[in-house]
Amino acid sequence: MATRKAGGTAKNLRDSNPKYLGTKLADGQKAQPGSVIVRQRGTRILAGENVGMGKDHTLFALKAGTVKFGSKRKTSFNGKTKVNKVVNVKV
Image 1 (cartoon, rainbow, N blue to C red):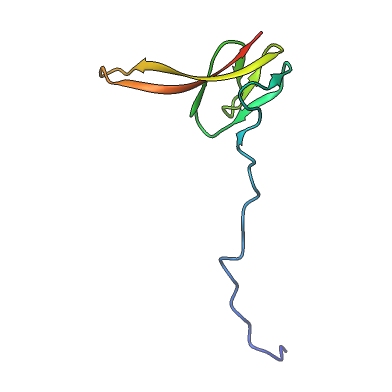
Image 2: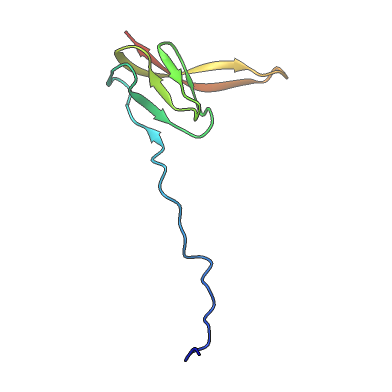
């Protein structure tokens, strides 16, 4: 027999592991082939020239060079113009 009554279980004491998202290489830094430039959820930043995109939307360098961030105008299906961020690797 228990000497104490059963206490309730706590529901809010769990936490998820950090995901370490964000920019890993800044503008002007050197990138090697395969080096991660940005880890992101969704396509907040688009892949430009010499940049590939993984299945979790991670942007990585395809060739060795210098990282350059910029913007690109894109016209939506309804004619609205949107400015997207783009990352390129200049060889």
